[in-house]
Amino acid sequence: MSDSEDDSVPQLSPHTLAALHEFYAEQQQQHPDPSGEDRYSIGVIEEDWRLSQFWYSEETALRLAEEAVAAAGHGGRVACVCTPSVYQKLRALRGARVCVRVFEYDRRFAVYGDDFVFYDYNRPLDLPGDVAAGSFDLVIADPPHLSEDCLRKTAETVKHLARGRILLCTGAVMEAAAARLLGVKACGFVPTHSRALGNEFRCYTNYDSGLDQRV
View 1: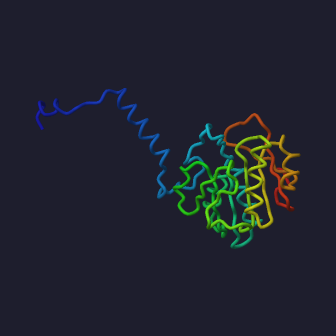
View 2: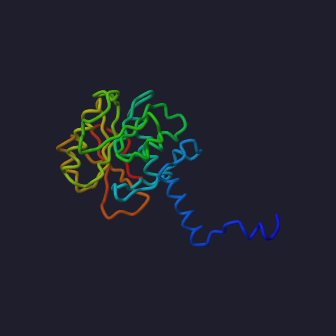
C-alpha cells in the first residue's frame, strides 16, 4: 500500500479509542460470555449498587457453598435467592453433587440458562411453573435491603420453596425479625463481602449447621 493510500485510512483520536474500549468493556460486562472458563468466577458479573448488590468475599462464598452442599445432601436441591455469588461458587466446586438454581432480579444472570429464575421480591410467589413448592432441600437467601418489609417478602418466598432447611444472610439488625419470620437463629460464622460494608452481617439457620464456629 502506498503512502497516499495509508493517508486515506480513517484514524481514531486517542479520546475516541478510549471511549470505544470503555463501551466494549461495558457491553462485555452487561452480556458476559457464558462459555468462558471463568463463567462461574465471583465478579465476572460486576456488582450493581443500584440493585443493592454486594458480592461475598471468596472465603465467605466458599464457606456458604460448602455448608449448602452439606445441608442439602448428595443429590440435593439448593435455591440461591438473591445470593448469586454462592450459586457461582457451588457451580465452581468440584464434586458438588447438588442441583442448584439462582433466583435473581438481575437478568444478566440469565447467561446461566435454565439455572436462572427471574425473581422480584416485591412479587414473592410470582414464580415459574417448574418451581414447585417445597422442592428445595436448602434455601439460602440474602434479601437485597435491610428492611423488615423486604425481609418479610423474601421470607414468603423462602418458606414457599423450602422443604425444611433455611440459611439466611442479612444484617445483624434484622436478627429479631428473622427469628420471628423464619424461626432462624444466629450462627457463629460472620460473613464478609468483597467490599467493606458499614453494616455488620450475620448468618442464620433453622437447623444445626456447620456455621456455628467462627473462622
